[in-house]
Length: 254
Image (cartoon, rainbow, N blue to C red; front, side, top):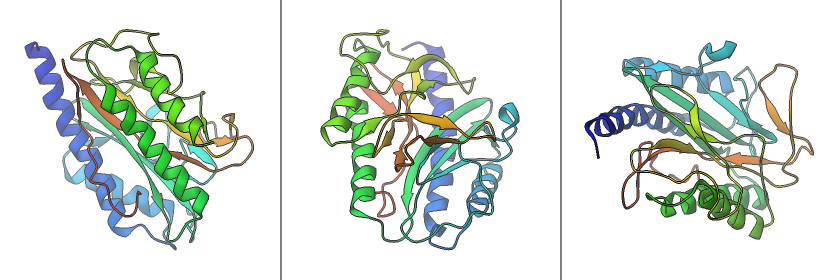
């Protein structure tokens, strides 16, 4: 791997460590009765304390430091005074910028005891992401990632959101390639060592269709069914990949 790739991995590793650390802080305090604004404050302070910046804050006018997407919100939910209650699920999506490099990750949290359906949705979403990560190495195709996710999700009776996707990342927040979470094996761009991108499947209990609310950001399921998401930033190697945002799994997530 070239010196440029080695530097990119080192820089992204540090940004990813900070982003995943912010989610670990959220995990310590998340419970019924907390507001999503409180979650945002924790993420902002942790990232700032680590001499980094929150990428979402003011990105294209986004007003907060993280995204908080509860229940039927698919992604890009805006933190507010909304109080989370027993039985809710909420995805917290954090991106840290450290020395000009980005680390992007998200995790779906359970608020107290959740329904059997919500528990299964969270488990299948996480599993689909990890199954895709486990096949990554130089020479496979982007379609292999999408196919792996879609096959696992649909075999469990859920659907894959098609309006949003993973993306290349590094010194830019979003760049090529687009990483679809559905597709056919052997199709799409061939993956090369040194590539850095996110895998972030959004999975719905009901139909895969989404719509954007009037705030211009919040995406929800059209049928108001539950949605869950997990995300890692990864770097491709010759024989596999490195996860730069390797959150420690806890009983809040699975």
